Image (cartoon, rainbow, N blue to C red; front, side, top):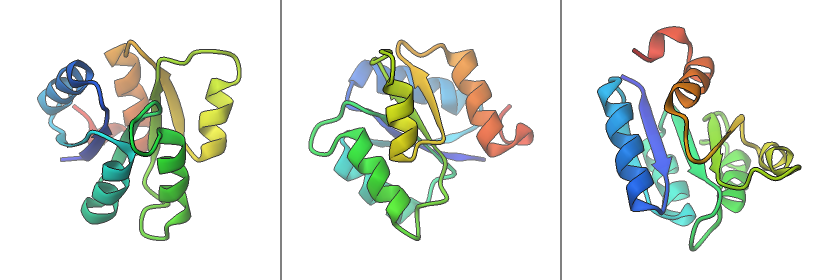
Amino acid sequence: MPKILLVEDNEMNRDMLSRRLERRGMEVLIAIDGAQGVEMATAEQPDLILMDMSLPVLDGWAATRQLKANDTTQAIPIIALTAHAMAGDQEKCMDAGCNDYDTKPVEFARLLSKIQALLGEGAVK
């Protein structure tokens, strides 16, 4: 069962995504800001992180840079989730260390295929 860390400050987005991921057989851990996300990723060692980029306390860009600079978390794949779909935003996320990028509102089938690509085909039902 893949362990996914969802770092998201919007309650509706958290609820919708966590329920849909759990129905697909994933264990979902939740952090509500970037600092908590870094802390949980270090302690829990999830298989993948879904990182909102606009977060309180520590934004997703800074949290991703911290995770990628840490030997214990640098190999964890991170998918950036952002409502910012402006030119250059994807590049900015990738430059911060994200492995992939998806826009909000989340199109679940597309996100699921990105999760499968990073975890391997057999990891997601």
